[in-house]
Length: 52
Image (cartoon, rainbow, N blue to C red; front, side, top):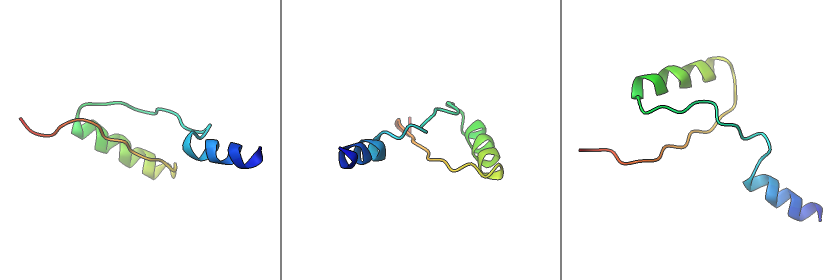
């Protein structure tokens, strides 16, 4: 049972929290640098299309 719980926690960690959502690149980099400066471990997920 512990093994299955470990696999589940790997793919769906309890610590996962949405911190910020933006469509503006300047806001994204401002927030990302603030998170890095605070020493917060994080991951970024970017979705969408780039172009016209």
